[in-house]
Length: 501
Image (cartoon, rainbow, N blue to C red; front, side, top):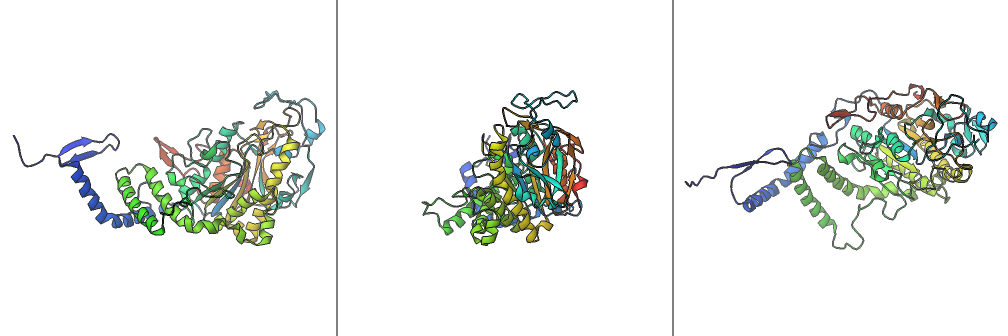
């Protein structure tokens, strides 16, 4: 029997998990009608999507804590600059002076506790004193080696965590741990969590920017800046300040003369319409929403980026302060100066890397502490101190948190002749700026600088303290993933009260 009425054909999409209805009409005609209908409502849809996104009501849209009931407590810091020493900076050659190493230099290492002594990739050698000179500095009397003459001059502005620990002494897992709170890949970094929680302070710049060493990425590559399972728009925007194209693919290729301002506007308009329709059909997938937001941000960045990167507009005195006039400090100095310019313009979290993931030219000094550490320390020291002084002079340190850290420390005994192997037992980090009590310290390593002895600080404590200063309770900042309320600090972490003002 035939009839003019067409019975709807129902089917279920295995990808979307919802019921699709077909009227039995020609699919080409249906697609055409849908396309024409969408064109009519395209501008309205774009406007609505923008309003919903700003209100945090669109799937995957960034939402600030003000839309979740407000910050958990008053924030002391608005923004963070983190300086990350890639490779494992040697605490016992920089900040953790131990007379015991001087006394027993060259003798067999025996901590006297019966604990098994192991090293990451070597056989434990003899006790090795620091090959550098040490002195107390500032009113706080902080011990610092002669490899950091500029940081020595600002120690009274710093608060030290002298007994940080890591459960891994392998670069990849330890770097993940210090960045994400987990040893395995796939988890959001601290910067991504801050972006997710707070967003950017300006719509023209990303919330989270990573400035890698000009010689290459850290050991974990781009996954060191990942958003993990958070919405994809919270991943770090990588900017290579000394590259010919600092922000990849921000502008059309030089030879693309057919790309004009009018064609870009028209193309972006069509792309927004197509993307909005695609996203509406896949409300649980944040990747496209992140792509849409990245295109819109890229368009704004085309105007904002030249000003962000224009360190040539800084005074000669400022450029010299950061060491841009010296070959050994110019790269890290430029990154530090750009970091200051970025937080001035609304970037919430900037991570500046010292050292890349290679076998040399970083803080991974296996072969020779006296031969390798001076190079990397010299490249960082002046610029890091300059950043602190510059922030302070401009009044930015009052609401900016400056953090210096690494993934683990080095052993108090030798590797080979005069190198040092990895040590997760103790290492040093320091804080400065908003909410920090300057000239203080928490924790102490043992007499060898081998293990944490008193008031040890974990990565979880480190992260909890940063979030606390931003007005966030680390135990309440969560994201539902695979049936678990994930958080940066997992199920651990205590705020380090001893360094807070």
